[in-house]
Length: 276
Image (cartoon, rainbow, N blue to C red; front, top):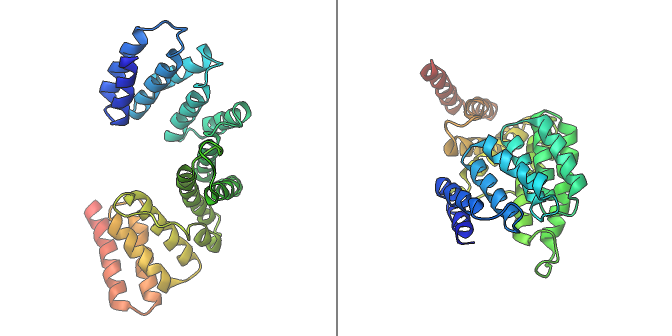
């Protein structure tokens, strides 16, 4: 038991090498049919997943499912396999594993995150209508769960976990609406999102990018300037940086801020010069 808990502690501290070493020691010290074995195998799979060793992670998750099918860890292992597929954009695998998970573990608290990953995969495949349906329903359920005070253990997720998952799902829903050119709906989807720039800089930048795209799509150029500048401040070399610079120049031009528009165009041109 000591090596197991040591491994879990190392995993919580993001020391994946030490976690793997301790958990492999724990696995070697117990029989295959020991009650702790499924937990050890799952935690090993998770350590390998976080260490970006997907083949070894998948092997350990699959061991839990194949050799301990009655264990309480099977939904965790199935969720782990789905996360591996999601991490590497294996969309067919995501859809198959999500469908199987929801059929096999409909009451698992992890089912909410499974639906989030399914909606994200649908959005990335540009299946925007499907993504919107998946995520809209999910967000509605999570918002309801987060809005009421439930005694500990009486709801599938804690209020805090429901709020965090709803925020992530709402952001992806906004992206799906932008992809579907439903710009007012995108704006509404993320209206309540105010991520902390210091603790959640990537999400904060992403929310500004979606908000800017939604406002530009509605030709609300004055309102779009702020989110565009915020995105470029938070993520000057991010994936949407050049598009944001171009949109900023357009928004400034439409609002008759021509000297600033010219500077924005010059900055955009400079980035292309630097890249070549």
